[in-house]
Length: 376
Ligand SMILES: Cc1cc2nc3c(=O)[nH]c(=O)nc-3n(C[C@H](O)[C@H](O)[C@H](O)COP(=O)(O)OP(=O)(O)OC[C@H]3O[C@@H](n4cnc5c(N)ncnc54)[C@H](O)[C@@H]3O)c2cc1C
Image (cartoon, rainbow, N blue to C red; front, side, top):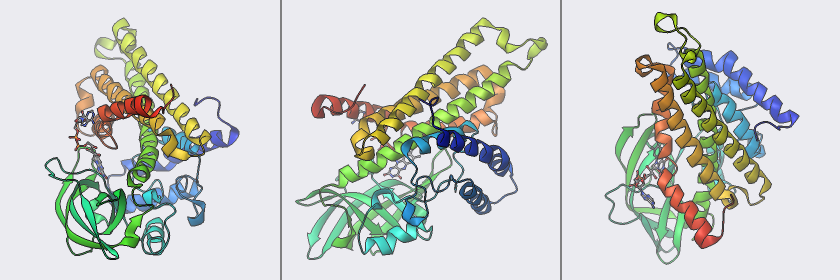
């Protein structure tokens, strides 16, 4: 639960709150700042507050914070509507965690040092006739296919892509975007402000040493990474629920037309109470999932179902909470630049990204019915 935290986590929460109020909110609201400079200042302040390194391994100067610590920080930063600022957290190894040479020197270390950028290629375009595949030719793999919605793909030096290797099964492979046959075919933005790219791979020849982890284990590796990201999304969402409720609370206690307080209305009180109930439930779910991840030595992979449940509950809840909040606040909340309008756009994508809600529901059902996994 978010309540029974030990002293070090209470300290972390207070540091996150101070960072948000003293530095990040002013940086977020400074319209004169160019994006690169804002990112640099956010990163420097976050590093000084001991937040930047929370998801990073100790070998590269990170803190390797527990799932609960990362949850506490994200929940608090979301509560101040600053958790989305680029530069807040250091780059993480992602699926490259624990890779050997040459991937470690050529890609993992430059990634963690901020010198190279990677993309995650999981989603196939809707019209793709076949999944992206690879055939083995001597010491190489030859990749053909397409990936879409690679976040940050236009700036990526490499893509960690899930491919079907003939005779072996799914594998994560690292494809350098400078390799002949890699073509960026589309660049697009989504309503939350992030940008993405689609790629085609035509006879792209990569060394077998670019297979990440054991061949045939690609899906397991991808799901381990995705679980950590899902828990992070859940924490951001729960923090934003609290931010939205703070906004509504203030609105309801401000006299409206004719000097009447909106909070005097029974109907409005009922709606407001519902926002609090939903947020209470989502926050309890989030912290339980984080504690289960930490309690399980297998890490995120073994608690995939609990991370999925937390992501569904939190993202569906923040969607409903901000939608109702706008309804209570009225038309002013729809004006571009209003805090609720901005949150609405950002949280809408979360019910699709990193696993659409219905897909996660069916995954959880499969986990329980076919694999005897997942707790209640
Ligand atoms: C902001 C954002 C960032 C993203 N970043 C990345 C990225 O970096 N890398 C990447 O690879 N992808 C990324 N994606 C893509 C994302 O993973 C996909 O959009 C998502 O998996 C859904 O796939 P789709 O869009 O092809 O929709 P579809 O697979 O066509 O699904 C559409 C709908 O069909 C239904 N449905 C489909 N399959 C099932 C099922 N098995 N059970 C029940 N219902 C089902 C669901 O209602 C679902 O919402 C990103 C998406 C967004 C919005």
